[in-house]
Amino acid sequence: MPELPSRRAALRGLGAAGLLAALAGCGVPAAYVPEDRRRAPDLSDRDRALAFSNWPLYIDTDDEDEESRPTLEAFTRKTGIQVRYTEEINDNDEFFGKVSPALMNHQATGHDLVVVSDWMAARFVHLGWAQKMDRSAQSNVARHLDPQLRSPAFDEGRLHTVPWQSGITGIAYNRRALGREIKSVKDLWHPDLAGKVTLFSGLDESFSLLMQGNGTDVTRWTASDFHRMCDQVEDMVRRKHIRRFTGNDYTSDLGKGDVLACQAYSGDAIQLRADNPDIEFVVPEEGGELWAESLLVPNLARHKANAEALVDHYYDPVVAAELAAAVNYVCPVPAAREVLAASPDRETARLAENPLIFPDDAMRRRLAVARDISSAERPALAKRWNAIVGL
Image (cartoon, rainbow, N blue to C red):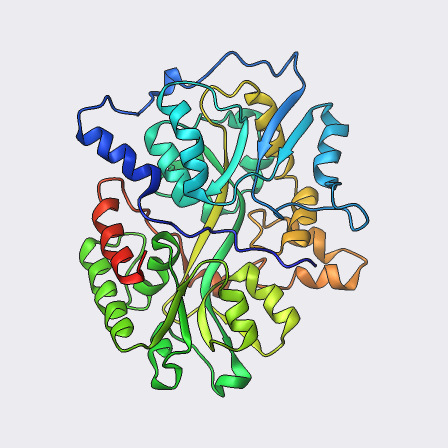
């Protein structure tokens, strides 16, 4: 399996979201688009095509031909719809900045379907830049979507978004080199880890797990919870306990032994453990964050019905199982587990028993979907966090 980059890109400053807030503060008309102004004439019936943008290495490929994507090709054979698939999303804010001028000015972006992290999807939904999907045409989504992901605070009922893949933020560590287990977020602050710990630099990637370490209910956290967590991290920076704050490069730090413990994503942990069996991944006793990266249809997309059909295709358990076997993140279609378990290939069948792809009930009880940061909160919270991180 090729090494996969982390799916959650680090937040770099306020970016385009800060620009929107600044414009609103200067009296520029609000960027919000009401539901009845989001649709364009749908060309799906006469133009059997759609434009789908995703992150790199986030879909299945043929072992002998990396340009071949079997699940997309199966969709085209079944429906006759040609998919123009591009791997153009490398950073949430960068992509937001690319499409926001068109969306602010009620213009089409040229995208029919995109995948962004849920904290970024929240911006699209709150701005009215994502269209409501027709669930009557998506029977697989209605039947098979993971109940724990069905109704995030930013999109109650998942009317505008559908998870592409999900994952867990927890702690990865080198069990052999450390010589002990890590069970809690508090264990990261033990003296024997001084200078050997990394945390995520991105605000949205880091805050939930650190708050959970304080016993905070992250589905309803407050500003005081946030600042209490920041005080603790700031103190650890002052003591030089934290080696550095990372983006996607944390995996190399752990792999090389430069750090012994770090915030980590479940999908990366599977690859890390395949390369080094001494690497462990733990969902802390206090809990871990369950997150998703989601599909959405931007405003004025010209092939909305085709895009909705593709979304539903990926919620067929057979298709979802094929994708899960390729990318190794938490599958948002629990029914895919039975498909993998029935595989005649022993290695594929073992994936069905991996709790980092299909969390069991015990693990799920420790997972929470964090409340997203509102646009009103973001400037002050980002300023505090970025000052600590050095962004």
